[in-house]
Image (cartoon, rainbow, N blue to C red; front, side, top):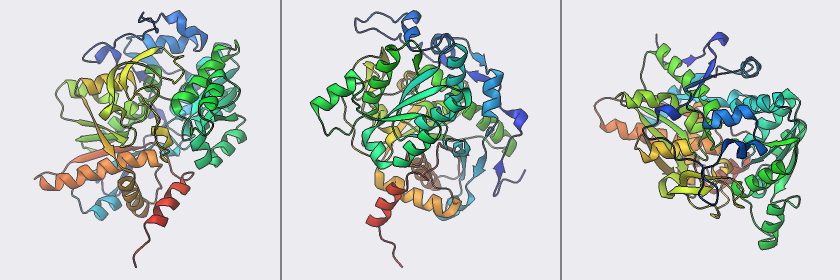
Length: 434
């Protein structure tokens, strides 16, 4: 099959029907989640904020889980998502490598987050929960859960990080339009929020703090559960539809990947792409799995591996992960979805074992490549996704020194149509030269 200017679209009946659980295939078993007293967390301790099905998915070593039909029906509204060869980008860079991007921005929320939002809403609905509390950074996760709440008739309250709410006000508009309530975090409705405001009235907020507020709210109400958009095992499980589809699409194109690249904040987007390929790597196939993260919040590159809380207030269990520390205050970068101090235990394990390699990207570099991509592929990437794009371009240029070019695949995890203020800032500081 010719692969110039090729977009590979799978038919609807090729939508994945199972989620792949990488836990039994990790080189080392994940250490247990711990209480503050360093005692392993029992499953029943999670029941205050999660439904039974998600607790099972979080802790089980079963290799596959069937995707329930109501979730398949929801996902089929936009899945399978296209895999496109970025021929225009290749020409602009002057490289021989093939560059493909998996376009997750075609979902109703504009990002990959809908893959797990629909699943989590379904499992909470059948468990009798009528209300969900969550956090959001850049707003993509909050948007996805608001849409899923509307789809499955659940009320949703979103704690949105203050600085991201200021940068991306229209995300709040979309969430409100979809029926969700949005509060700026830190808020005055939780103990964690009030304490943060007391300590620093001008705080920009963090994802860790917003998580504290959402967990506190869920734990205090019997009709409410907590819903998390990244980090945890069950979230990565739901996102494996991404990697499963990429495998089929590359088979159709008749190529094998040399590099698989995605941005990394908490790990759901990266994990969803990467973990279906872990058995291939372990069997000897040469695939470079690269997690692209911001220089200003490099949890995998500069964090320490150990047990740490996933939130500022210490309400979550202690997770085995790379972390910059739960009190780390990241700068106000536009890629709000990557402003997180920790990392998925699964991704952390893969980095620790050498299967995954992290790379950092600076703001100027990512916007440089985002501009080129926008002008050649006519798709505006979210600043988060542009981290993966930048590393992809960097690798493709490096491969020009080699005799054989490579096949590089990155995940366009979301569009940047609600991030135009970030692009305006970049363009105003980089005037065009005639």
